Image 1 (cartoon, helix red, strand yellow):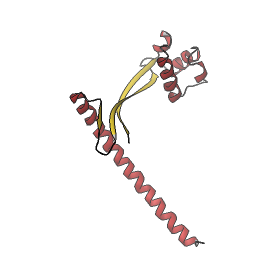
Image 2 (image 1 turned 60 degrees about the horizontal axis):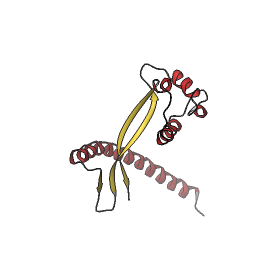
Image 3 (image 1 turned 135 degrees about the vertical axis):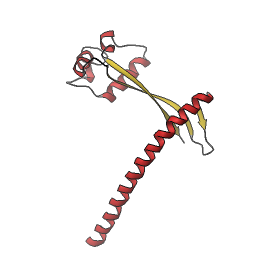
Length: 135
């Protein structure tokens, strides 16, 4: 069994490793963000929807769609409209969860349906392209 001193020393090492890993993750995320923009532009310029690397990883253009309050509308207006819409009524209490709304919108669009105009007018749709990967 380890002594308190040994446990405390190991704890300190792990806490420092975690802090270093967090800093490294932040640095990696910043570099990925910068490379992602350049890579998306280069893939578009070359007309390449994907790139397969020698390592087996495939990079591809992925579209994420986000839904939120449209400019000139309030969150309260959107929440009320969502609450009165059959497609989204169950998402709304006094608020709505953006990720749940995103998932529901994906379902609605996949089924070829659309929210009523009065709901869509209160909603801002933002598309963001990212580079996805799989190994």
